[in-house]
Structures are given as structure tokens and as C-alpha cells.
Amino acid sequence: MASVNKITLIGNLGKDPEMRYLPSGEAVAVFNVATTETWKDKQGGKQDRTDWHRVEFIGRIAEVCGEYLKKGSSVYLEGSVRYDKWTDKDGVEKTMTKIRGDRMQMLGARTGGGAGSDTSFDDSGSERSSPAPRPTGQSMGSGSAGASAPKKAKLDDFDDDIPF
Image (cartoon, rainbow, N blue to C red; front, side, top):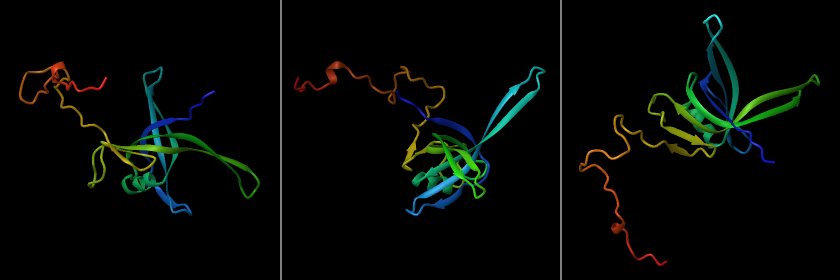
């Protein structure tokens, strides 16, 4: 039977990422992300609940996190839930839940010449730009015939040298 361990978060950093390095030299970025849920109670009053999530990235994407993310940064994250277990010096078993991130996208405005709202990174640290947004008011359908409108291909426009 197949299984899935996938989590998606959109939230804000509680403080700057903590950077450390593994003996292999790989970077590790650890930070907390707050997600807030808001609703109205039976009396019509606004209620909210904030949950904090410990997030860890490893490798090139961790370096990107350390360079560009700051306290208050708004981020979109994808990853998986991990549970670390250990026994402390008093013999008490401890458990910590964390998110092992594999994709991160910075949300919000560009700041200081860094990557902005249209840039995301995957677990290899590769930058992926989102497609350019369409200007508002323009539909994808046929518009007025003008020089800038794409020309529709006709069957006669294709080459007939297909070998089958």
C-alpha cells in the first residue's frame, strides 16, 4: 500500500534562520514558521490561533534560506513531517516534531535586490521562476486582430515530410 508524508505551509518566520554545517560541509537552516487560523465565535467575536512549526532545510536550499529569509519573512514551504527521538541526560525519552523542507518560495515584495515573490527553490537549491503573470484585462481567447496577436496555425502550415 502506498503512503504519503507531505505538508504544505504558508506562514511567517519568527526569527532569522539558524545556520549550521554538517561534517560533510552541507548547510543546515533551522527556523520556526507561524501559521495563524482566524474565525468568528458564536458571539461574532474574532478568534485566532497561531501554531509554530520547526522547519529544517539541508543543502543548497538551506544556504538560500540563510541568505534571503529574515524574521517576519512570508514563505510557502513544502516538505514532510519528521519525528526525532532521543534520551536526555536524565534518561527521559524526548520527541520533537519538525518539518524537513524540500521546497521553499519567498512571498511578498522584493527587498534589497534579493529574490522576490516570483522565485522558488527546490531541495537541490535550484531556482525556479514562476511564469510571468498575464496583464489584467487580457483574456487568453481570441482578441482583436492586431500585429501582436499570435497567428493560428493551419493544417497546411505543417511540413508533410513525416516518415509515417
